[in-house]
Image 1: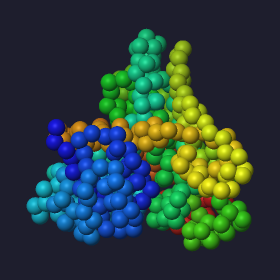
Image 2 (image 1 turned 180 degrees about the vertical axis):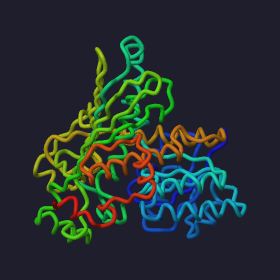
Image 3 (image 1 turned 180 degrees about the horizontal axis):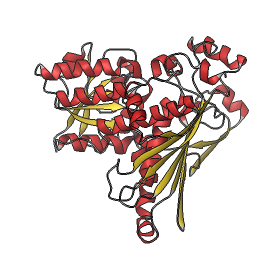
Image 4 (image 1 turned 90 degrees about the horizontal axis):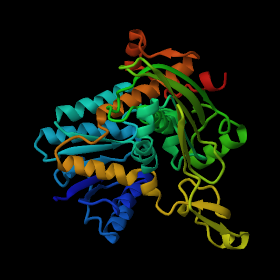
Length: 414
């Protein structure tokens, strides 16, 4: 089979994680990396691991002539501008066939819909990277429980949580650049995967119709004076002036359009989880059966004593967002595969080589953005939002949360 030549725009945390995942993915190579911070280091890793011989290129337009598909792993606030340049290059004759975008597709519904339209106008295949829907732990459980669902009925409640102690980079903490706080950053994962778990086998990803949204956003740790100062000192972000939420919880209600049955997806996310590191926890309950995934339950554990820990500081080699380098540590021997990165990459590669959109395309990404923004609106208004109301739908088209506008104090300090 032909190899898909990928170009990476962005060489930070997620790009490096995806490059690690590529070691387990067939029929693809990295042929170009956009010339920005971290590009040389990423290119070195790619070459050392036989993932390609990438050129470092300082023009997005030129990149489009050196790749079959481009993966946008750059920060949220530049993605639309990047997509505009990609679409323009393709319209002018660049041979690019497809484009990948890491979650979220947009910081607002308007941004996400522009991303969709730009890809359509340029006739580009699309893949929206939402790794948790590709997690084998989840999908194997769904496959195993399919006979029970057919006999007893589908899941009625799915709960999804993603938590860690906070992001790596300053722009993540800045709501005006990132698009919000932890809800924008990780709530998109949890809302999407809850819907995925609740969706009956064989039905499209958007089969279940969202009908109501409840949400609460809070600033529980990083709004305290001590931690505000730490944020300001480390990242230059002042949460006394432009705070974002570090904790969110909510419930989205979906309706099965064939049966009329209502099901619930509960989501919880935080940047204040000061335990081992990143925790993904999902469970679902159906009539007579259930499933549960906990990323901190690993078949591999290591122990590091104080003396050894003082001599070597390598906390995050054990677990993403790890906050400890000593004691009894949970370790994932293959994080990229466990989190679904290898599977989503393989899906994009195989789909693009066959000339079709990936399992999750840009339109799906726009749908997730719509649900996330509905959660922000529900939290701001302090009520359950009717997602079938045409007035609400119209308001969401141009909505930008107060937190994303830098006015988070109005909803987080009141």
